[in-house]
Image (tube, rainbow, N blue to C red):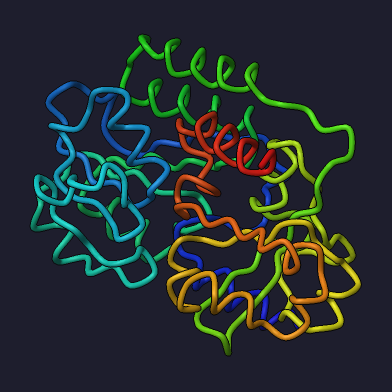
Length: 288
């Protein structure tokens, strides 16, 4: 089962599926404090989005495949492969002065290559929580010697203040889908559980960590009120009608009431500066 969880974590790519228990940190190697003239490569969707929100879009020369927001960023920045498959020659060709990467994705080989090239590395250890997102913003800003980021923090607080509370928390089952034959559910210590709870719901399954294959028995035992998926997962299932064909779903509250929610993956579980938007959107849909 551990192998299954690892495979799902790799497939998700845009999120870290296990919540980090460590305090979020920022590490830098090589060169001194960044300036506004940096040539930035970002190998994390959450970090890329944070950089853009901090006014660094024009300095970003390269992004990885998880950097899907803003959607048109790849028109001005070269798109590289996922960090696990990064082509170091393609990265070096961009002549970066600074490379951002999530701590979970940094391997010794890539670190050595960047250090040998005397390229500054900023390593972010992201925690999948509201506090973690605020620290992400602060850490990225600090690495660039920026101080004007309070508006981003305030927006998160303002969004949270608008949330509707539920007398009975709706049970939400997150399904990671790659077609009808590849269905996994998110358990404890996942960004999916965290976002569900922040939005006022409760995770429908909590007896395990990470991910497990979905079974009809699990559906019936959890009896979720809502099914939550990524937009891409819904598409892979052929839309809502395809999801409703999952064996056993028709006997759950979610199936009977056709309560299927789909959201953008990076927005939903990236814990980016848009975390307030993600929470309020999910909270609103859980109210319907």
